[in-house]
Length: 99
Length: 134
Image (tube, rainbow over all chains, first blue to last red):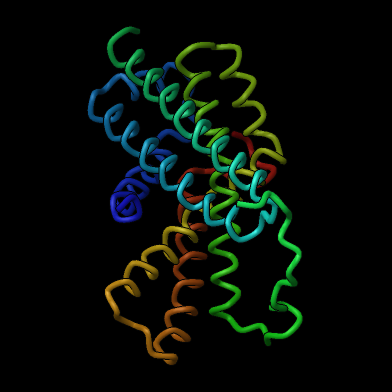
């Protein structure tokens, strides 16, 4: 499901990053201020982090032999994904409503 | 469940199988996935610095403008495009299509070509290349 959602989101992300290349901070913040950009970027972040979390689980399953290490890696990754996602979306919201 | 390390031998893979293109691409799909995951940390750092700190953003921009930074960005861009293109192929496979051997062989070459073209295109449009100014 995340893979399917990511097809249009990645496309949008690549196009946006090309548009933002070489811009200074003010221009980037201005771009993030637009609700559409903030919302889609937020979606891209959440979907990517969740997708990465799922993918990394497979990596741990395949390559980490010790069960305890495998589980801790998975838990640490889950936490990191949520933390990064939350922090990222919070920053986007802050920029969209504050600034 | 016993908390012991699994000591049974793994079945040999790289030492046994003849390396073929679809096999390489599958490995690369996995490797680019890992690279993308690690790179997402920098992406979040970029957003955070943009929103919260002019100093941090400037420092990050300087890093991205450096040779190493440009190389990393190029690698991440390639990883994103490659992983996405092979990802779409995986989704197509999930519908049961293109699973014949000849189809897999030809779609493998197609995937490589598309990835190279799109990466070069994206890189040129963004105006960046290793060693160039940010």
